Length: 221
Length: 221
DNA sequence: GCAAAAGTGTTGTTTGTACACCCATGT
DNA sequence: ACATGGGTGTACAAACAACACTTTTGC
Image (cartoon, rainbow over all chains, first blue to last red; front, side):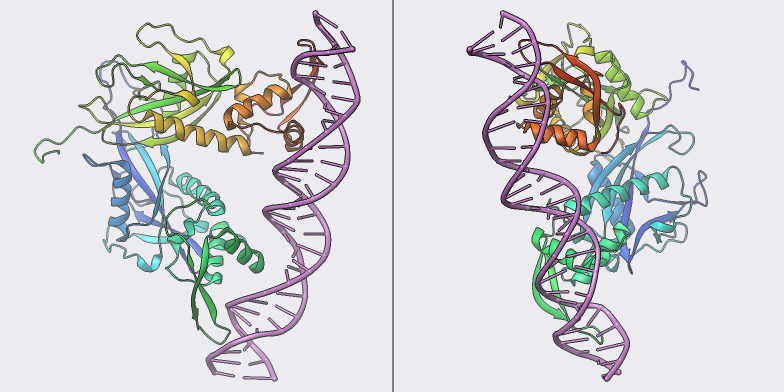
């Protein structure tokens, strides 16, 4: 318990980013390995302190760029955690969390021995540092909900894609199978995608039509 | 611009609460009058600094109790604002915003000459301090969306109420008129309310049946 | 008996879900 | 010719929206 005579310093402001990507029909999140004293040896979400003269959104974008090399992707503030247990043990911290959606083909993970950044399936996560498991759960709930009424999936796919690829992204995130015909009808009637004109020949089967998102920026549909 | 030699102190953590209530078919928000140097004379949302050893949720509940005397009402974190312009002009602040839903009959506003706390219609707000107009807009959007798929309205009504009273709350928040029959059917079939048994005799017309919320705690319906 | 708010049903439209077969290609 | 994934239509169910008259009371 704090005493009256020695007021605690004000909490630090940290920014934490849940970076999602879809790799081979499975939803993954980027984790780094902690070597600091507190929670050493645990996997954790990437994060860091807010810098001088930096807005929260810019700090989140900077962390994302540092870890993955990507920018201009979907990035949204999630929730701010202010549990007393947060921080390095001595100094308390308030953590403003964000989530981001990236194409894993565009990501170049830093190869720093100490951090070991890497993708982990959200459905098979280990016990993470702090309350990071809860943060991922929260991010996943938000992502699932946004997927239903926005075009956020644009940030997980290249400019052109097939309907099957789009459906695989939805299925990976929602963790359930969907009907091909209903999915196609819904995507087209909501106007989130439109035919791109080309085809993709891939393997011993009928070529697939290519589609693009009508907007590659956040939009409610 | 900050120099290299004199690092700015870390931002302070403030908590701001958008307190909504419905008064006579109109949605109101609680504002206080600023007398501090920065934005002196403007109306603003109630808020204050996070205290030592206090979680964000507790700080928000404390502010709510200080301003209104109520507790155990619906209170949800909204968004965290980290614009550089926030703060008292010298010291930067990060503002974690919350919104609360109260019955105005239960509120006892502090009568402090300097603050002049009072209810203002959200549809006729003046220009507020900082970006507080944007905060109220954001809170209103969130409230409207929650109203559609949760039972949050419980926090705006007494234990027993008539269907017309409930409908007036919905109409004040959504700012549109609704059909009596469809509204009644929906509320009952979703199971958010149930008949309380009694009636209310009020004026020269048929008495109204009383209802209660099946749960007076947050629930998704 | 009249004014005022409470209460009540039906119909059409839209949205969502379930479901099975043919098509174009490479080998 | 066959294996592979791409592409298409229909029928039922559920949810939602529009709409008007009768009931109970106080005065």
